[in-house]
Amino acid sequence: MDYCCICNASETIDHIFFHCYLAKLLWGIIKEVFHLPHIPKSLKQFAEEWLQGKGPIPVRLLMFLFAGFTWALWTTRNKMAIEKKFSKAPTDVMHIGLSYSCSGLFFFGRTESDWEI
Ligand SMILES: [Zn+2]
Image 1: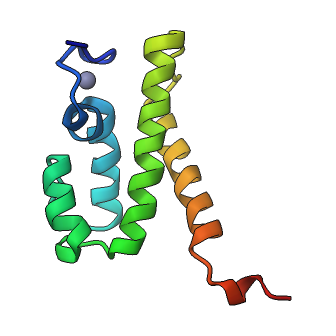
Image 2 (image 1 turned 135 degrees about the vertical axis):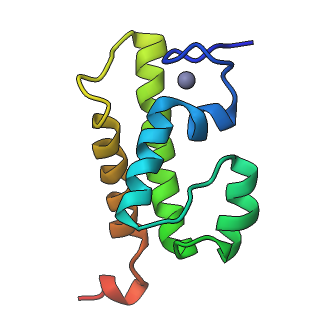
Image 3 (image 1 turned 45 degrees about the vertical axis):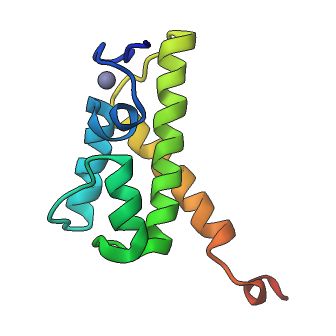
């Protein structure tokens, strides 16, 4: 079994994306920005409720946010665990996640007619 490079807990998918300190920081910020009553506690809950449109964020926006932030978490954690490179501030992962999410919204959030000159 692998252990989290941040808090030494068992490294599971739910731990990496929902329970670890860095994930909680990201979800906490998302909760405040969107005035959410709660945040998902597991991938199962996220998939069964939020991705089915039962959550408080529209599914299309949620997909971009989730893809951007999970990729930011994954790459940040890999840099820590493999390359031993640590961010100067935990909020760096938020900026990376926003960057990925905005890139996705810019490129994939458009319709074909948006690209016509
Ligand atoms: Zn952890």
